[in-house]
Image (cartoon, rainbow, N blue to C red; front, side):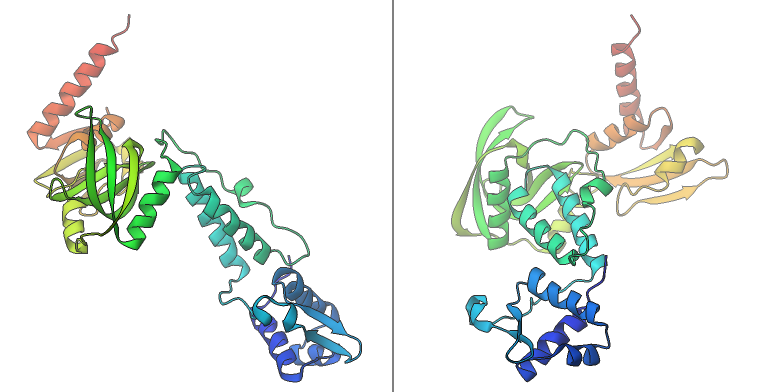
Length: 327
């Protein structure tokens, strides 16, 4: 794929603006390029950027017919990217799409199409990113696209929301008025951190448990970044609140190869022991999610502290063994 230079494209347009009509010989001289290379850039301007650029036989040069451009004057796009940057953006959009297929399709697809057009210079098309980058997701819970768009829009516009929400633990339906603070994608699923006006406190709502959304014409209550961080990031995983405990976990040397590369918590501490095992310490406020992670690593992990967490892991393992006793 030939590379089109932003600098050259700008220079071609500038020369035509300055002289009104520019000959091929002048373009070759000013750009220090061959005729074929100049024609490639001209085709890019005309075909990819929709520049009303034509050869005017009577003036023996290339001209820009501004009256054919939207708004009566052709202007270069305000944002440019090199080929490597466009590939990076396409990859990023592919990753965003993979978070939940179809969730942002109406918005992402046109942007991907425009980026592909920018990347292709007419010589040959690039291979689709989707064929080169494979995303494998596990057990994401499906979110209603309309709900996502309403919540995201309200978040950006600073408007409150009224939710009809299904509380899975209590198995009851509630109505909440919230001030959304941020959307969070966590372990394949979407949640919204918000100020709940009913509870007068910060709460987290799972998007797939929202049954109805209404955007209110009322401004949100803004919560400071420091307060959000202290409330939502002190605990372990999705469970908020100040971290009251600190778990000391010892992983076998076999499992240490993987766990030592992972970040379980921003405030974790760790050490490699002489026998090859791995010691990890993480703060937590609620042990529910931490227990699930420990079960995932059993029997390659030992809880050294606190005793309460060790006892809960032992009970969970015993219950699982009893339930799965060979018949």
